[in-house]
Figure 1 (spheres, rainbow, N blue to C red):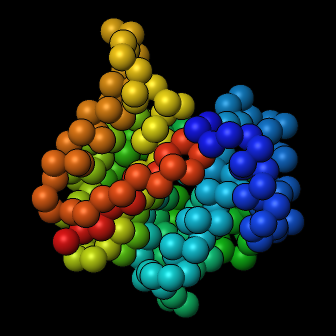
Figure 2 (figure 1 turned 30 degrees about the horizontal axis):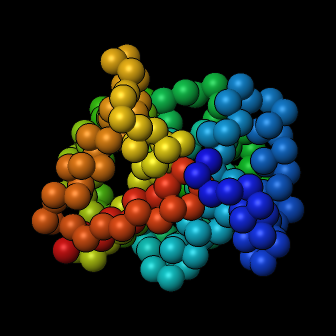
Length: 213
């Protein structure tokens, strides 16, 4: 978490409230999952939902379903005949996502693909308007290289956790801290990539907003 807790509380107090369904999903995730911090949460969820409603995408791709919070937020902005494909490697957490997709009446708009994201991406031929990356941090650049050709011109890629609890500015990174190294490598390469415009939104753990030129 990068934002001061008092500031984050102030933001929450002056933003739309988390709806009841997402609040229940968040609560159940914290009760039943080992790593509930992986949940997007209210503030980030609202940002994702806002991007989706602004773009009115026909197709969305998500890497990292977890318990489905971010997928629900993103899918709310889909066109009537739109589709969100979400990829998750851990099938043991998906029962909760499926339960809440149904409660949100989005089960017909959200398609779950199970498996390693890099492998699943090779089986997808669609063109996407909006992409959300929140999976294995070591593989961010590899994901990006596979995803960019599948994004339409003007499409948006949002990469989560690009500030990685502030570790990206530490002078010394442990030799075995592959997640931090993966994020730093991704950020550095994106900065030099002339195929896109980019901006880091300092919300929660940092969100890189990338637009394909």
